[in-house]
Image (cartoon, rainbow, N blue to C red; front, side):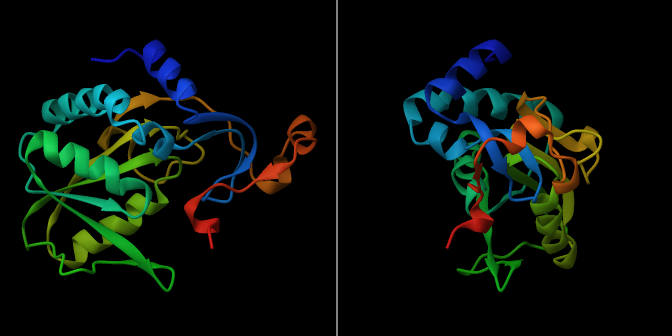
Length: 196
């Protein structure tokens, strides 16, 4: 499996881990931003990441019927893990601000579903996916991600249900608590919720 040190080298080499002043999709401010799309744009480099995560998922979750990912960030990693584990993989999309299943995708009743994302910060997108699973009468196994950058203050889901390739300790701040040093850096809003 890929070590934390080697994972960080790869993330920086592919510009998937950036420094600056970012407003995340959650609305929180951060001095670092993880853009897994940059890592995943190099399949030959990201393969070791996905294989390592797939091995961890196999150890934690013995029976998986379906993988569900949120669009856009989770689609590629969901697909890759599904390919490695030989599992059906679908994704949900935002329609008028809410996740919906489209394109003929559905979740069978009583199926065992794993949610896979690229990055988990608060778990908000994962919880929105979980509502679709519950509504379908299926079973939520847990969550997996390439990067877990959550902390006790921000995480809205149970940590023991998360499997990640890399756990990063990156501080986040709400708008009222942004440190002066961070305020001096121009803000970037890179998250998918801000894209037009």
